[in-house]
Image (cartoon, rainbow, N blue to C red; front, side, top):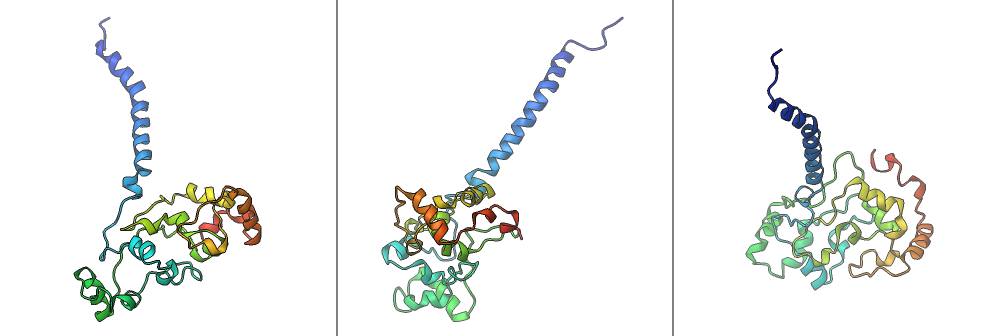
Length: 218
C-alpha cells in the first residue's frame, strides 16, 4: 500500500501538538506581562497638563499643605481639584503675567474650569473614599507617592486590586498617627508593626470587613 503522508507530515504534526500549546502559553504570558507593564498602567509616566503644575515647587519649595488645594479630602470621597480662584489667590499677585499661567487667567476670566488630565482614574465599578482612608491614618504618600518631589505629577502605583487587598489585609503596615498623615517627609518607624496595631485599635479600623467585596464594589 502506498504511503499516504510524506515524511514532513510527522514534523508538522509534532509542531502542532507541542508548538500549539507553547504558542498559546507564550501569547498569554505576553498579554499578562503587557497588562502589568508601566506602559499599560502608566506608572512613572508623567502626563501632559494644560498647566505644568509642580508639586515639588508648591509643596516642597513653598510648604503649601495638601489640604490648601485638595480641600475636601478629609470630608469627601473625592479629594477635590483646586478651583481657579484658589490658584489666583496667589497668582493675581505672583507671576501674574507669566505666559505659562495664561490658561489659569483665561479660566478665571471666563469662569470655565481648567480641564486637568486625571493621573489616577479608577473604574466606575470601584468605590474609593478619600476621607475614610485619611481619617484612619493612611497618608497621601501611601497611594500617590512623594508628590512633593514631583515637578510634574505621575502615577506611582498601578492600583490593581491585589495591591489594595495587601493593605486591607494588613492595614497596620501603612497606618500613621493622625498628625502625620499629610507630612510628606514622614519616616516609617522601626516599630511600625507595633504602632500600626495600636492605631488599628485607636482609629477603629474594622479589619473583618476590609476584604469584603461590598467594601469596594457597590
